Length: 290
Length: 272
Image 1: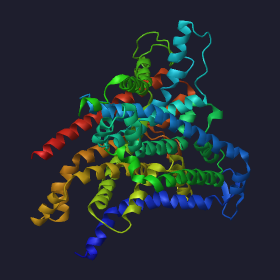
Image 2: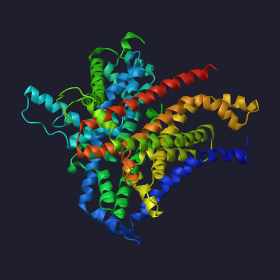
Image 3: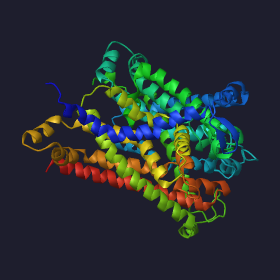
Image 4: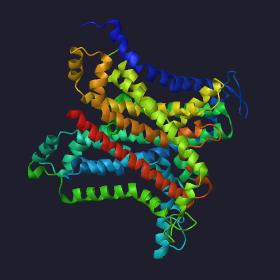
């Protein structure tokens, strides 16, 4: 049955407000960002709309920026990998357990999404700080006689990000594991595989899409973070997001801020594109949309 | 399942169980610590505890900056969740119920704001209004929050909509209902759990947002998270712990209540 013009138009009418919102609030701003990155910085808060590649030249030649890129990528990669290592066993447990109140375990994973991110981040100060539970306990036990310096380090930043990202990882892997046909595992076992071999040969490969989705999500969110390094890191632990914020809000250097934002966007966009080429983007959020 | 294929046994399984418990402790210990410390009598927001006290809550009730920030966040989140949910439902209806050229592209585009770093979205919106020579307003912040939450609404509603059979809608239409009435009488009631869920989700996303809000808030206006951040910069006072605890109680209590409500609504929809 051929569509009438009205029928063909209907989905677009329904989508119109969403598309307008995305166009005005995301696409257009990114285009302007691209434009601004070629403007000339005059002085704090002032720029001239003449075409110059100075910002881009500065970015490509100044090792200061390369250092930030490298550090951001490294910290985000460490965070994502640690999330995968810490997240896989719980996801496996929830998927395979015969515990009757599985929903409770899942609910407990979703609850952190409701608790304010700021609170979850600063709560680590009470664990890692000089007055924190670890130092106070170790001092009291006499194991150490000076508080350990754990807060305001790169480790603390990574810890805070893992704490925030772990539910994303676990849910993604869980959804993947849940989709596996259990007969395949039984078949592997009857054919003589040990539990571990069955896991390595059947379960793990079949759960890879979820694992990869989790890795991508954790990497992207960690690399774009601003608040965690701000609260849990020292000045030296600033990441690319902090650099952008300081360039724009502190130095009021809008063209350079636009350039750096474009860099972060392209960098993470490339990672997402490579992933999407093999996996498809929409499955990243499968675990979250249930 | 035969016994030989049982994976829920053996030392491997016990290890997995132990790790799972540790991970859950890891998730919740810091939050519990904040809640416990909020009752600490000490002047300093850390250990050791020096006694039980509610005085930080009393202090909080008199803190006008916090109350103002709370109101701001509440209104922004309320308006955002209503508008965003409506937009999201319309979008999800189009993406699930219709086939049209370019659908894959639209799908990717709708999810994109969740993957673009908030810092970039934050800068983008600022550049837009700088380019248009407009000041920062609360309206802009609401618009920004809508953008941030939209992907999640579309995903949540989509997931539920796929489960609602098209035949119900077709039946209503063959009985003479027009599209809007069909949506109101059939689809929307069946969709209600997803609607409630997305409203709560958007509310928390907006209420909780800090990174983007740092860029978008008008001069002199604080939202709840930015207020907490500025309090943290001065000192880690027990007042911050009290504030954190209150927010935890509200943000965990509300969705649980909403979830229970959604379940009741879902049951009602199944047995009219």
